[in-house]
Amino acid sequence: PTTAIIIVAAGSGTRLGAGAPKALVHVGGRTVLGHALDGVFAAAPMQVVVVAPAGHEGVVDAEIAASAGERRPLAGVVTGGATRQRSVAAGLAALGAQITTVLVHDAARALTPAPLIDAVAAAVSDAGVIPALAVVDTLKQVDGDDVVGVVDRSVLAAAQTPQGFPRAALEAAYARAKAAGEEHTDDAALFAAAGGVVRSIAGSERAFKITTPSDLERACMLLGSTNG
Ligand code: C5P
Image (tube, rainbow, N blue to C red; front, side):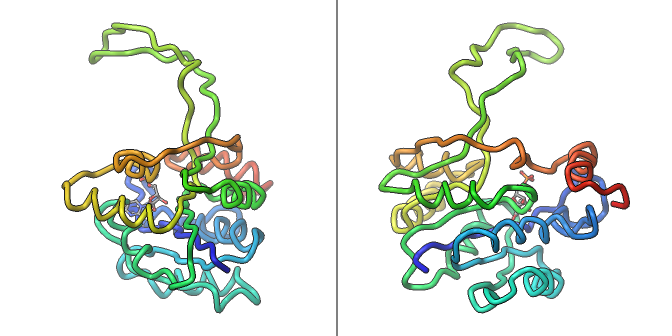
């Protein structure tokens, strides 16, 4: 395959309060990462690079083995860094020479459907592609506890992953951000800061990011399980 997906799973998961790296927390009989891998291996064949929390490479490798089936040779593990951006950079360094399209995916978006992964990969051109959802809440601009303004939600969208990019341009954008000492919250922002064009396609409610304990409950409910 000429497409690769980098799954970043090296976050600490402090906001989840589970006392373990978020991607390795169990929900519905599997880890968060295990569910994410099931989605990825149900998509079209691609190189899979999982970025593991330092010291947890072995368990991450076992999760890949449990999920990959005949695609095992396409998948591997690298060790993550102190920020998401550094973790993605570690994944980029592990790509095969033949890779021309790169998807970057949060392991924490554990229930992302395989068709969304395929749709992002198919939409990548010279431009980057992100899945996005319309914002449903009314948003306020605040200053501490004071509500100081309204925000027009019709011009806003909530970004999800996987986000897809042409490989050479993404690598150049990462090199640029590193040299400039910039830290971006997602790959689309980093790509745009280097002058890249980013487009959006329809996201999925199921691609939500597990961040808080209530997100874990929601994932558990969607999986039809209460045994965590
Ligand atoms: O913390 P947050 O939920 O924004 O993290 C998004 C994704 O980035 C998660 O899947 C997390 O595991 C990953 N991450 C990482 N390395 C870091 C921080 C976050 O791989 N240093």
